[in-house]
Amino acid sequence: MSSRFFESSDHTKLYQQYRAQPPQELIERILEYLRSKYTGELELALDVGCGSGQNTFSFAEHFKNVVGTDISPNQIAIAADVSSQMSLKNVRFEVSPAEEINLETSSVQLITAAEAAHWFNLPKFFQEGLRVLCPGGVMAIYGYVFADLIWERNPDKNDALAEYYKSVNIGEPLSNYWPPNNTNILFKRYSNIEIPYSDFTREDFKYNKVRYLKLSSFFGEIRTWSGFQRFCEVNGNEAGEDVINDFRKRLLDIIGEDLDLEEQKAPDDVVIKAVTPFFLLLARKSFEENQ
Ligand SMILES: C[S@@+](CC[C@H](N)C(=O)[O-])C[C@H]1O[C@@H](n2cnc3c(N)ncnc32)[C@H](O)[C@@H]1O
Image (cartoon, rainbow, N blue to C red; front, top):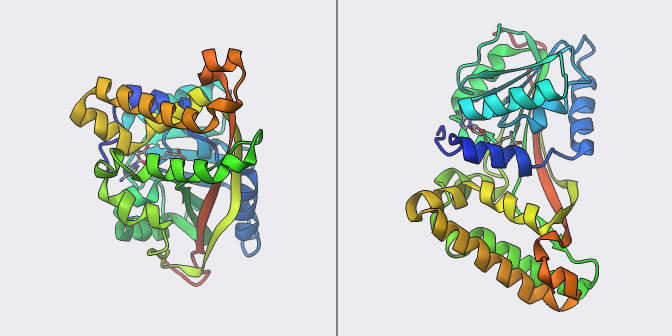
C-alpha cells in the first residue's frame, strides 16, 4: 500500500514547514516502555516513513544513532537538510521502503512510524521489523486524525469549531479524495490493526499535541493533507486555493465577530489553539524470539 502522495518537492516543503512533532509525553512513554524490559545500550533507533524528519529528531538525544527512512527521495532530501542545519551528527536519512529495511538483523532497539504505518504493506513491515529488532526491541506506531480547535476568547464557539473541523476534514469536497488507507485505517485510529509481537498494547487519547497556530499555519497544514493534495492533482491548484478560501471564510464566519479591526484586515495572523490527540500502538520482540 505504498504511496506516491508525498513525492512532489512542493508537498514535502509544505510538510517540513507545517507538520508537527509528536508530543513529548508520547516520546517519553515509548522510551519508558522500551526500558521497562530492555536494559542494554540504546545503540540504534529507526524511524520508518520519516517524512521530513519531525519524529526522527525526537530520538537523537536518547540513542547513539538514529536512522530515518522514507520511500520518497524528496522527503529524505529535506530531512537531511534540516538535520544538517541542526548539526545532528548521529542522525542519518536514507531512501528505503518500510517493507525492506537496509539494516542488519537484530541491530535495532526501537522502530517508530509516526503518521505513516497506514501507508505500508503491514504484514511485510511487521515481518521485516521483527528481523531488524534485537530481542526485547520495541515497535511503536502512532498518529493522529482530528484536532480540537479551541477559541480561548470565546469558548462558546468550540462546539461549532469541532463541527467545522470535522466537515473540513471528511466533508465535501475532500471526502472523495482521501486515499483508502486513510479511510480504512487512519480515520479509525488504527483500532483495526495490531502489532503481532509480544506485550501488544494500545493507548489512545492520552497524548495531546497542543499548539497555538496562526491561521496561515492552520491552512498550511491542510495543504499537506493527502486528501487535499489529491484534490489539487485532479482539479488543479487554483481549485485547491478556492477550497482553502472557502475553509477560511467558514472559519471566519464562526470567530470573525471576536476579531478587532486590525485582525479583520489580516485574519491569517490570528492565533487559534489546536489540540491533537495521538494514538499509540506498542509491542516488543520477545527475548526468546530468534529471527
Ligand atoms: C503522512 S507522512 C508522515 C511523515 C512523518 N513521519 C511525520 O510524522 O509527519 C507518511 C510518510 O510515509 C512515507 N511512506 C509511504 N509509504 C511508504 C513505504 N512503503 N515505505 C516507506 N515510507 C513510506 C511517505 O513518503 C511519507 O513521507
